[in-house]
Length: 153
Image 1 (cartoon, rainbow, N blue to C red):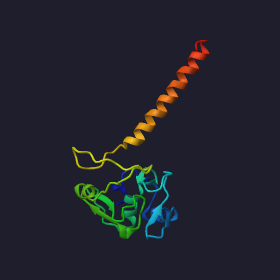
Image 2 (tube, one colour):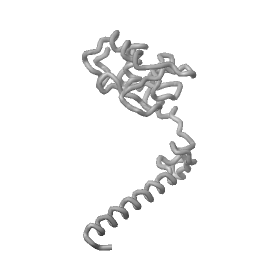
Image 3 (cartoon, helix red, strand yellow):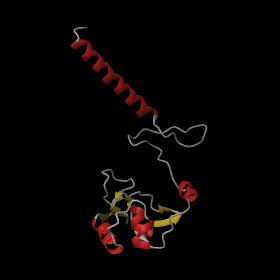
């Protein structure tokens, strides 16, 4: 069964992988079993035990009956949760249908609705504008530094 998980290190057995996942995880107040994988950010899918996704590896060893043709989805919405009661297998269509978009970007700006799709825009315009302004300032500073190095003002 472990051979069906993409990216999983081959030296793991079901027992060793179960112990490994439980060792790297902790329980939160809302009942989720959150894993700390190779990534630093909380709330995103984590990779463990080679290059395998933690929620897929957890489904295989903690729930069983894994079908590689289906996606593993968290019912709680936390991408780094491996609680067996929060994991289920659904089709790709169902997994995409259940996704929700945050009304604000990660910097707290309200997102705009895209009139063509009726969904929130992927890129926050305010964050994008600020990033472009910072880039222009960096570029202008580099040009000024290069001109000063050549004796121009």
